[in-house]
Length: 307
Ligand code: HSE
Image 1 (cartoon, rainbow, N blue to C red):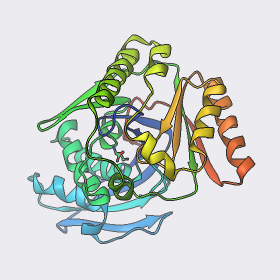
Image 2: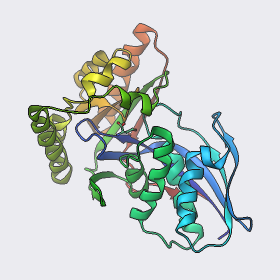
Image 3: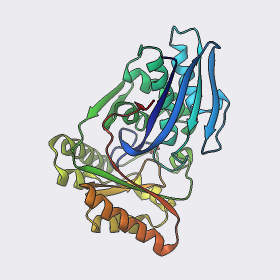
Image 4: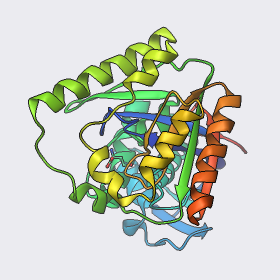
C-alpha cells in the first residue's frame, strides 16, 4: 500500500471528572487525511483544506507527530500528508488530536503496522505538546483506540480502554468562539483541596464503574467536576443555562468538552440526545450566539481507513 485515506474522529476529553485522563471518540464528526509514501525522506504537508494552518512540518501537529514516528522507524523514505480539516481548531473537540493521530495511524498502516496503539499515542502526544504546551493523551488515546479510554498513568504511559454502553449518545454544541487549550490551561489553579480531590476521584471511579456496568444513572450522577469547570465555564457563553436546559431535556449529565468552549451532554438513546440538541440550540438562539452542533454515538473504532 502506497497511499491511504483515513477518518480521524473528534473527541471529548476530560468528560467532566477526568481532567487529562478520560476521553471518548465521536462518530459523526472528524477530519479526513490522505497520507502517501515518498522516496524523499521526512514529512511534507502538501495541502490543508478548510482551515488556515501552518504547512511547515515542524509547526504542524501532524508533521511533528509524524516526525516522532519516523525517528523510531527503520523506514528509509518519507510521507506526504493532505488534511481536510473538518474540525475547527480551538473548538474543544480534539482538533489537533485528530490531525496528530490521523497522521501516525496512517503511517503505521502504510509501514505494515510496526507500532502498537500505545506507541502511536506516544507519537501523537508530541502533536498535542506543540498545540497546547502539554503532551496530554486524553484526546489522542480515544482517537486511536476508539470508545472511552482512561490514562491510568503518564509515567509510564498506561492506557485503559473502557467499554461503552450501547445506547450512549453525545450531543456537543460549539459556540463560535475559539479558545486555545494553552490559554484555558493557564487560568487553572495548580493545587486542589483534599475535599475537591475526594469528590473528583469518587466521580471518576463512579463514571468508569457506570460504563462497565451499563448503569446510565450512575454515569449521569458521576458527570461532575468541582475543579476545572467552575473556572473554565466563565469563558463560555451561557454555560450554566446550556447545561441546566440539557439536563431538563433529559441528558444524563453535561459539562465542558475538553478545554472548551464546546459543551457536551451524554444521553441514553438518540431520541433524548436530539431533544438535548434542541434545548441547547434554543438557548443560544435566544441570546444570539452562533453555534455548530453535533449528535453522535460513541465511536468504538477510532481512526479508520476510508479509502
Ligand atoms: N485535558 C485537556 C485540557 C484537554 O482540558 O486541557 C484539551 O482538549
